[in-house]
Amino acid sequence: LVLFDISPDLSRGTDTDPDFYPTSKTSVSQSEPKILKPKAVLFKKDYMTSVLAERKMGWMVFFIGTSDGQLLRLSVDRNLRPTCPKVLYRASGDVKLLPQIY
Image 1: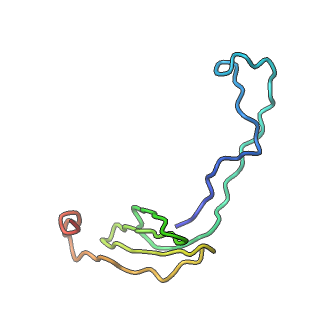
Image 2: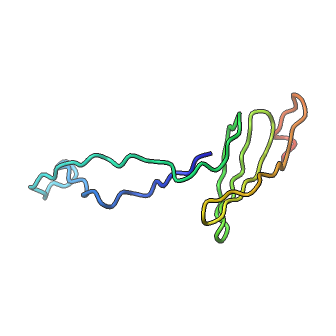
């Protein structure tokens, strides 16, 4: 689980495509987009299939589903330091997960 900062790059000029901004007569040279780099590697786990993130006060809480039937909770503080993951649910055998979680 890797965390990226995907906020818009405000250092670039606005898009002045003449098709969308007909009053603009000047052409602005396009700069290269910013290459995203991960802010932090939070968690390594095989078979991760889904992630839900929620912000609670100064914490981020991630709920991670795996293809081997686990539901994990991972809390991360403001300094992007994760706590120990907690297994909330573990499926046994070839049981459908969704009916049991509801």
